[in-house]
Length: 350
Image 1 (cartoon, one colour):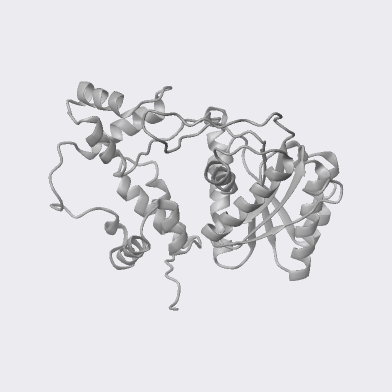
Image 2 (cartoon, one colour):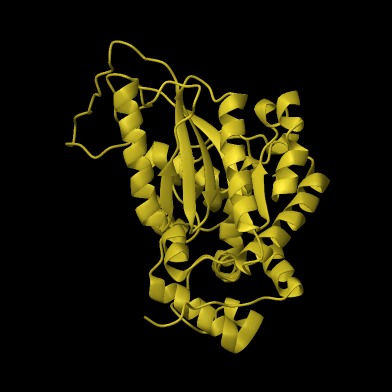
């Protein structure tokens, strides 16, 4: 097997590519810029391909062109392909509407809006095919973005980028911590079924107790997690952090844990342990408030819930726990990392 394909960026190049995410440029340019940044931050070609749902060869082509032509390789050369009735600015208009307007749209509504406000006539079917290049049909979800402190987020993102650089260079271990929960009843979701019929999922008699999970995620390397009935308390959190601190001290290697500002992360008992953990080589990086999208472990929770558990009902908490464990095992194969499940001393085993 040959050497892994890897590009290296200066801080200025990384910042330029990062700024393209919010610039008024074609979606293809934004995607290619993100591919290059992810690779420079340690993501392998296969992981990037899975993330974008691209072929691995497409990712390699983007990286090779970057090495040969630099920033110019992100844009298409003029004169390629058939001439479309619509322009990139029309899609950017729709993207802005989808981002800013406090409502949802289907393809019929978007086609009507495009015709009325941009004088571009596309059928809903044609528009769906066009939008697949950068926009997908999916459920909407609530957001806390309006509560974010934009200045604090910018500073924290810059600091986190530097930590990711150091981790990619092998100078530190960088892990992401978070908690989530599951219940025996899954929310109804989309499914393929016979035309003219609706599939009905029978719910169990009892909803059951909440099954919580706490995890430590090191992308492309490891996923350490534990399950508890009820909520994750400070004792479980401290046990997991103590384990990480002992590993850091044994390896004599700096280890950074990225996490949110949850109550158990900042309770008095935990604060008293910060100095001890730092002496062992374990440090905590707190994300800004309402910025869960900065934590990649959130995507793992989402995939487990929407891809592995969606549409299923479970008889009891034990069946649910086994399903979550199986879901984690599936994710480790797709994400190319190892998993380890720990048992907490003060909780019933699941």
